Figure 1 (cartoon, one colour):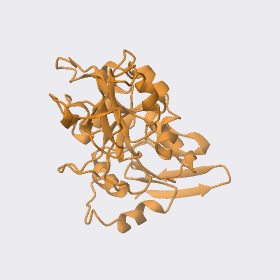
Figure 2 (cartoon, rainbow, N blue to C red):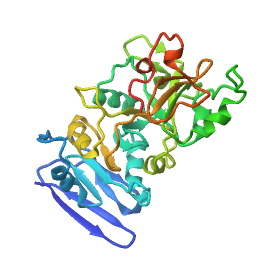
Figure 3 (tube, helix red, strand yellow):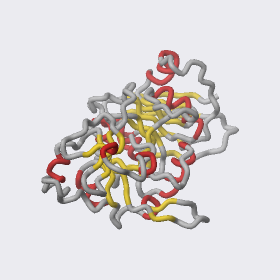
Figure 4 (cartoon, rainbow, N blue to C red):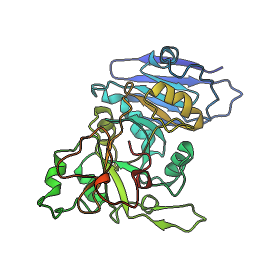
Length: 313
């Protein structure tokens, strides 16, 4: 049976995981601040008896600063961002192709590195998302949006000469903006399908700049945005808002980590299509409809929010 030891010093926190000699050796991920975690192992199945009760599972995850349960790294972070050093192992894992769960200013999101094709394929398998369904990206700043999209429209033809100036007042915030993708966005993000199927071009991408300290703490340490999809119950079209329950349900499916920022409210972002004139709200969420936006019900539309970003956070 595995034995866990923890040593704490003024500037160094080390977690050592030892196993019986009969088990084969495996890789170790080196992290900053002297922290090291064993490479991820296939998780064992666990039974969730009462999904709506937090206390039993909370006790299992909350004692140490870091825990590693059946190959899943679980980090409990301060929602205010006061302990951002805890996010260093998560950032390192993401850069190495990991798939995990982080909080945003709306819902929890399953994320991976924008430029890791294998991680994106694994994210789709974990969430059971069809290759034909698009994903959105989480950006740290407007600079990321400028790089990976063609930007916001200069005007809407209805008296708003500078939409970008209006958008800046919304960000960071609970909005997903659908924009035209630039050539900088990797092909496996703007095209969908499998390696054996014919690719179909998707020119648009949903972008977010979440107003969340934990999410921003991760994004600012990354070298690119994160591919993102919201977390829902596998068989129900309902949001999952408790990170402990998310770890129990999706951990055995192959998640590498979960960042716990507390229970969220089931209120997704407002989705605004910026590819046409005027900007259209195609899903009303946490962000209020502003005067330069038009509701989808007010105009004819041949598609819906789920056709563009089915699981935007």
